[in-house]
Structure formats: C-alpha cells, structure tokens
Image 1 (tube, rainbow, N blue to C red):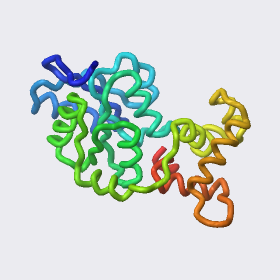
Image 2 (cartoon, one colour):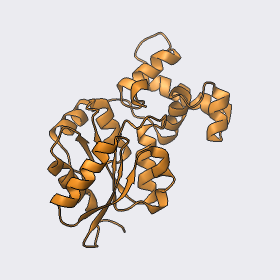
Image 3 (tube, rainbow, N blue to C red):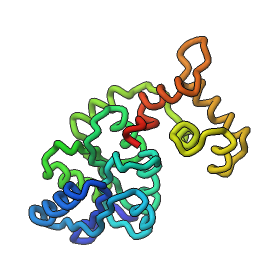
Image 4 (cartoon, rainbow, N blue to C red):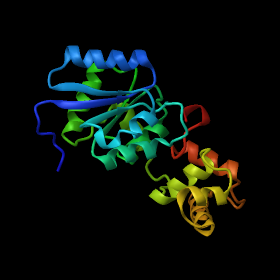
Length: 221
C-alpha cells in the first residue's frame, strides 16, 4: 500500500500552465518546507499524461489547462497510476469543487489561499487523508441529493457533450463501444436530470451537467 508515504521526503509533481505560478509555488515549497520536494513540473496535461507511470507521491493539479480533457478524467488517470491529487485552481465554482472531490482528489485549494495551505494539503494527501477547506465543505453540503453518474455514463457524456465527438457514432468509436451502448447511457443520464414533462435537448442536458459539475464550461476546458 503506497499511503501513508513512509519515506522521509514527500515527492510532489505540479501540473500548471502558468510558468510564474508553477515556479513560484515550487520555489516556495523548496524554501519554506521540510520534507517536501518538487520533482516534476508540467505545463500541460499532455506532458503529465505522458509520464503517468513516473509521477511521484502527490500531484498538484490545475483545473484550467487549456485542453478538452474533463477534470474527473485527469484526476482518475492520476489516481490509477498511484499518486494522490491536490487540486489548486483559480476556479472557485462549488460544482467544480464537488467534481474534483467526487473524482477522488483529497483537497481543493483556491489559488488565493496562502501557500502554507497547499503545504498542509500535501502533508495530508501523503497520509491518504482529505484536507477539507470551508469552501469545499460548503460546496459538498450544497451538492447533497444531486444526481450521480456512473463512471461509464460520465465518460460518455464527457466525450459526446464535452467537445471530443459530435455524433453518437463518433462517441462510440472513441470509446470502443456500440452506438446502442452510447444511446443507452445517454438515455439513463437524461432520466437522472429530467425535471419536467419535456425531454431534455442536447443543449439542455449539457447545461444541467455543467451546472452539476460533471462538465466544465467551454472557457474552463
């Protein structure tokens, strides 16, 4: 079992597309903490994804990386390769916070927070425990009782509605499933988010999923 981290130094990777923030946080952790070492700096998700097997104990992940990969997919890819995830972002939307935590991140830290808060989150993550800020606590409380998607349902809507594919056939091809499978999952998602007699349009469903934190706004992809 990888956690809690038993070695004396917690090794950290940072995925952040703003060079000033990337280097600034790296330097602060180096100068002001003991037992924490930044070993990887990545300016895009593609760079980090290419090194998934080599990522260290904890990954600090930004939300806005200028790509079309859903936040949940990034978090789950990192977790599946071993490291824990601390999200650090300028996005303070409660729905996005819920999305990150539901995907398995152990903390969600606004970039306006002091760097010492990031340090605390890293130390908790290295022990495999959550670090819940008041903002995240409020966001989680606000999301109680909202519809939940299975991993496959979320994968389908992320591809079909998130910009990676335009048709059900393209979605099926990308995911390696049948068109009927795509239809079945989309129908299930529509039922979960239906709140009136009129069937949800594609745009209406996308808006509901975005509001619930399952998809990011176009500007946040």
